Length: 112
Image 1 (cartoon, rainbow, N blue to C red):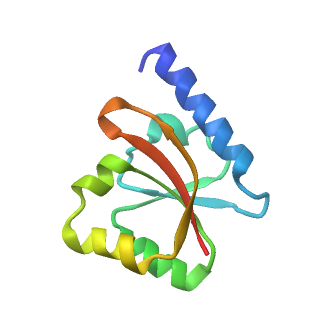
Image 2: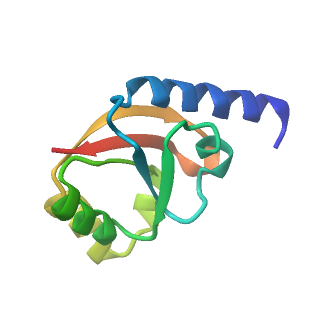
């Protein structure tokens, strides 16, 4: 990764860190290692999930959770996963920014 990308990842992670409430100790990343250059700067534990279905299960168990995904992951998800994300999860976008051209927009959401 070049220094410009690293600086951008660190800046985005700082912005995410500032918006996370102090009592949030974990953030869920949807998609395996999609944001490693960014999540290494997040000052919370980052747990990787493979699908939005896993997020739905966590939402039921834990209540309010914070998660990160990118629009390219959603675009490439199968129909069942998209359906869960678009219709079964109750969430709001709390942050978005351009991360990498091929990935579209990075989004931080929270369940409610």
